[in-house]
Length: 99
Image (cartoon, rainbow, N blue to C red; front, side, top):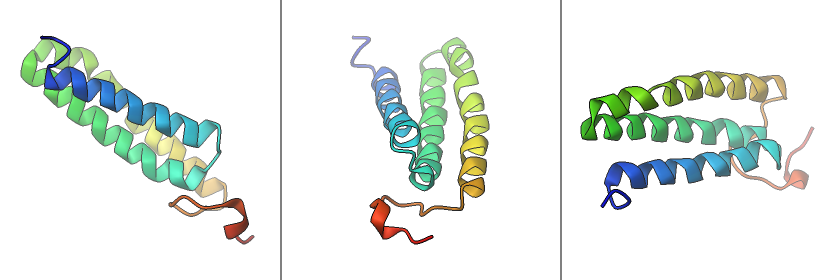
């Protein structure tokens, strides 16, 4: 069925990865982790777009703005990370980072 289609499952997984990034960036404000994670979100969106295109080229074109927007978002997140003092790109406890 439609829900068992690999393209649909990949889209759902990509949304889960994006929501995890959203939590890391906006709730925990871990800008270093967020900067590395947003690249993974972008790669997932590119793969999702490609999988949709394999099923139906029109579907691939309709979802194509997603990786384009995420490329812009990736640049913004990396700029935020750079301006905020280049925090570590890995998860850490607040007490582990020295000023």
